[in-house]
Length: 336
Image (cartoon, rainbow, N blue to C red; front, side, top):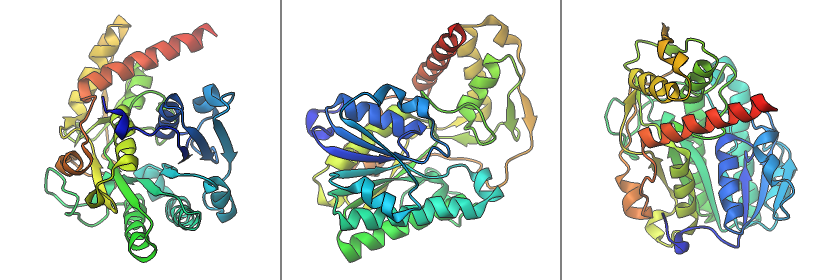
């Protein structure tokens, strides 16, 4: 656990994309720590059920709107101390199918938020960057200062975010910190839809007694990162007083990677403790996804040194918690 000097308390915080998976988890923690939270979301991918538990909290304020609209951004940052910018259209395949919409949300929307935050002004702007920025660079583990060429429109948009943040820091003096998330997973992640992330998709399929599809031969590997680690580093990024730690980017991961085949086996093993029928379900192999990198592994030494980041939940424990959450919530839904 992190001490009280490194968690956000008694502040007014804007969480963009607050009805999404990561955003709603951030809001939950911030409210527990006696903050006032403004949630901005257009519900294009965020879900109202994710914030349902907060709506009667007097310290929670919802603004339904789009970051592509500047007036909405200015309204959202009014009186705010810090911005945790999570709003984006994720997914490499989505960006390949519709690069224009991804650009509008991830570049135009990001620039609008930066301008609004600068003009308010807010104390610090912490934003969700992406490991997709490493592109085709083959080196492992991934180091923040060594990137390759982008492999998808999504990767382009997230790299542009970093460039804009760096320029705004230099030109306007706004404090920014980018957090390059590596395959975040955990409670409230959406298991459905064409662009669902691999862990909730596997869990969702197995709970329905359906065969999940592995893209490729299963040798692809990822540095899967539980959402509680993301919550920790967002707070550290806001609270750090180290001048060397500001106006830069950090890897957010555990520093260990797991293949899709290993993920599949563990997911089936953990779910089988709740439902023995899952033991006999076989995974199927499909084609590799265009734009995917083969392997992802983060060097997290920079975040450890400058922010004091220490992963709290490593992959296997995080997967056990996530499986339990999906099982519990499926049972509640079925009872209703």
